[in-house]
Length: 193
Image (cartoon, rainbow, N blue to C red; front, side):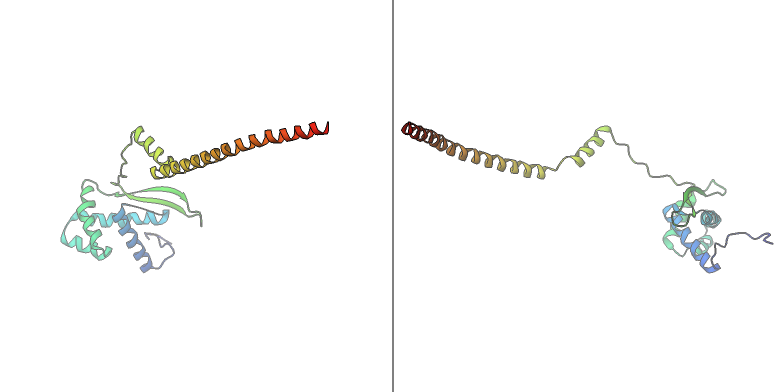
C-alpha cells in the first residue's frame, strides 16, 4: 500500500530526481516561467513553494539554506531581493500551471509553469502609420537598388537611342538603295520590252 507516500518518482533515482528539480527550480526563478511535462510541473510546485517561503523569511540562515539547495548565488540573490518581496502578502500558491497540449515525439502532456506574479512584457502598440511604414520598407526596394536600377534604365535608354540612331543612318541608305533597285529593275523591264 502507498499510504502517506508523497511525491512522484518520475522513473528516476533519488539523486537524479533531486538534481533535475534543482535545475528546473533555478530556471523557474531565473526566467519566471518554464515549459515542461505536466507531471514534472505539478511536482515542481512543492519545491518552489518551499524555496520561496525561505526567501520570504529573509534571514541569513534562510539564505544559506536556499543556497545549499540552489547552488547559484545570482539566483539566490534574485530570490531574496526581487521575487520574495512580490509574494509578501501571499500565503502559498506561488506558481501557476497551464496545460499546453501533447509533445509530438512521445505524446507526453506538456505544461507551462510560471510564478504567480509573472507579467508578460507588454509591447508598445504601434500606430497604423508606423505599421504601414514598416511594411513599405520591407516591400519597397532600398535606395541603392533604386539608384542602380535607375542607372541600368539610363544605360538601356542610351543603348536604345544608339540603336535608333544606327537604324536612322542605315535607313536612308536603304531608302536610297531601294529606289535605285527599283529604278534598275524598271530599266531592265524597259529593256526587255
